[in-house]
Image 1: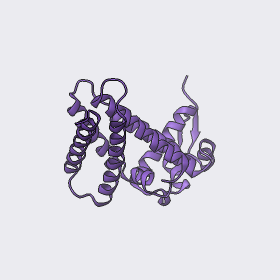
Image 2: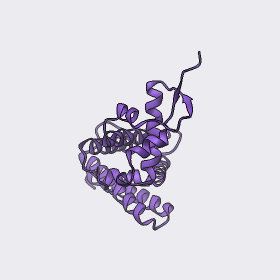
Image 3: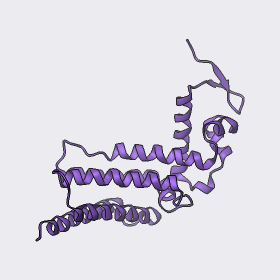
Image 4: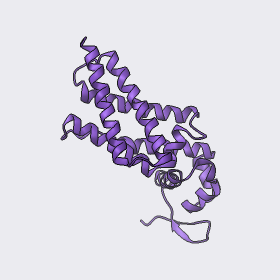
Length: 208
């Protein structure tokens, strides 16, 4: 059976979506908007118009603009997590390199969203901070599993890799604001600093 039609704000007819489909569509629109423009420059009415829904329907799914942004950030973080997942067919250096390139590339494509989450007006929001922290923990676990495949990585390695993740995010944010040097150089810088960090931490752990 064909789904019922609903009228969009401009009077045109459109397919009525199920709850999850509608929510996913709104999040997709949010990712497009917040990826290229600052949070404070986007209005609720614009989001609704872009999605082809009324403001009332948008508020039905997301009570406030901030709630909408948090949901978009969570969806973007999940997408970034999938794109940066290690490829088991690659060597350890190759997997780390691919992960770094995917991370920087995704940040470039969603520059304003990245900067808002890390440095923008909502960077101090508790839920946004939690999403960012969850992403850091995910990447920490992935890197440690590659560079220390055994159980229980030494505390110094855990600390070092966590510090490198913070460095990588800070370097990427600064690069997005300046766009110099070229992206390839940024990726190489992060790759080499990670290799040096892991080498130094493992040497300390072994008493060398």
